[in-house]
Image 1 (cartoon, rainbow, N blue to C red):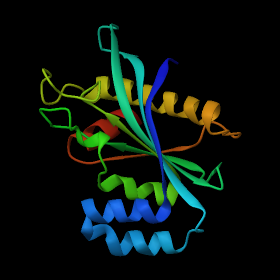
Image 2 (spheres, rainbow, N blue to C red):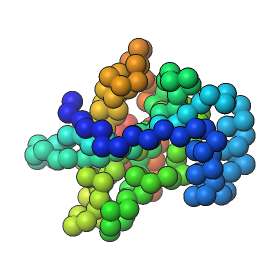
Image 3 (cartoon, rainbow, N blue to C red):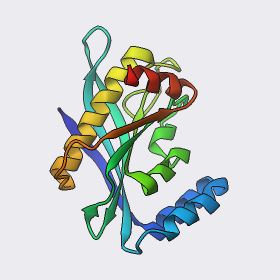
Amino acid sequence: MNYRITSEQTYPLADFVRIMDGHHPRLQPTLNEVAAKLPGSITITSIHYDYSSTDLHNQPVQMSSLMLVMLDGGKLKGDHLWLENRATQSSDSNVPTHMWNIGEVHVLRHGVLVSPDLMGMGTSIGRPVCYLCGKLAARCTVDAVIAAQMILLQHYHLTEAPLPVLNSGHSQGGFDALAVHR
């Protein structure tokens, strides 16, 4: 599996909660409740990565994804990978999957969150709104999970691999989550 980490940033738990509060104030009570049960040594690392996949004609396509990893004292914390499928409908480079979004609260409960950019390459410029959906989204999303598992193995010392995957999504992402399940 070919992947390339394009950015990586680590946040102390309190900073992560503060950032999420700024983007989604309605999550704050739940986020604070979950965060209060976690040790103060927790950090959240945000990893953007590109990976190779194929389209329905078996032609190569470059994709990108966001992964959040919860660490405790530098060690991976959590025993699941939460897959958050989203349909990004942006017409510029500020694609929602590469920004803080409502699904990121799941990293505090599951340890790892992966959110593929279903538009590809971190931007939807020049692409139709639903560029990847159904079988194509499923194929590229499975490749995002494989790349994430490889990153966890090679950079975060995951010893019991692969992590079990919990699959979710809503709207177009819900349709894509069902396609991944199938």
